[in-house]
Image (cartoon, rainbow, N blue to C red; front, top):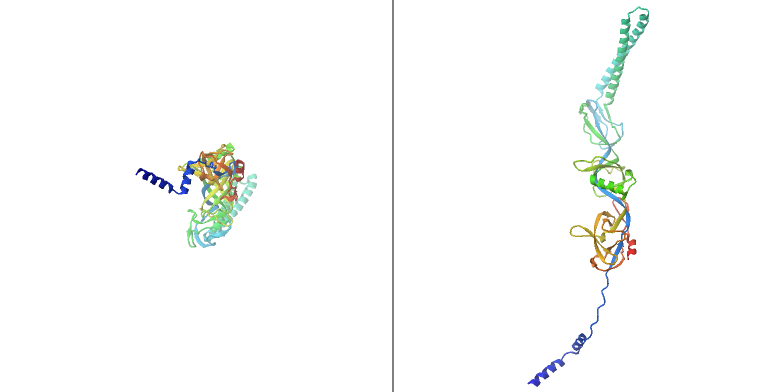
Length: 408
């Protein structure tokens, strides 16, 4: 029985395939080492200070350059209206006609009173001249002569009053022609022919507004204004004066307005209820695109930041707290995480205020392949070179890919 068991074991071993024996022999041999892993390749840009315009976006509303309310200056019945609502009118053009009959009569009465006063003046003047000769010859008393001189003065005063009455009557008669005080577009008529208007209540008849040019009143927080002044004083921002700042508009439909405006002034008083100040800009409005009361957004180029660091948006991420971060390559070619402080965008780039230094190499391609602490191989990032346009209509430079070659 023992001999039989040994033969069975030998027989089963002999039945193993030759390929399996080869694998077993290879496993018993010396092991070969795997090739070392390659460092991942990432595309980087080297950030350098770049001049960037500082643009502030503010809300505001449009207002007419001139607003003239057409009001009644005499009492009377409106005979007719002589304009089309919404049309352009010229300064001095008649808009309404008020019944002039009472004022024509008043003018004639004033002229008659003036003529009477002038006749009385002639009589008193002649009498005073005669008394002057007679008093020298003691033919009349000194008192009679003084009375004649006084009568002459009173008659002269009556003539002056009569002339003033005539002038007043002529002015009131002229007010029956209600004219436009300015050149502009007339609005809705508030009265119709047959309506009674009163000078004592200054009845509003219509409104004329000059729409070219057009004012835009903007509101800026006092904190923003304070920061702007500090940046200018420190030399971080450069400006050639308040009148040189460029202002562009974004209309209610999101489209940019074709004309560029100019700043007129900044109010020196802070509104205590809102903590803001008013900034007024002026725009040409030849096509009458802007109408009074429209809500707009204005972008004001307040200066230039000569030391801005631009990072392509693809190289900046945000953590769960909303903190902007970027991966950089240090001097040992290792990846490091940097928290950033940004102040907005300029074209396809983020404007970094803090967190980076000039010459830092920021990873913009292959970010998902590396982690902080990894050693990497850097190459110049291949980014689109086409410039983007911002809302101001100026070309925004593309990411500084050319400087990336120096950090490769």
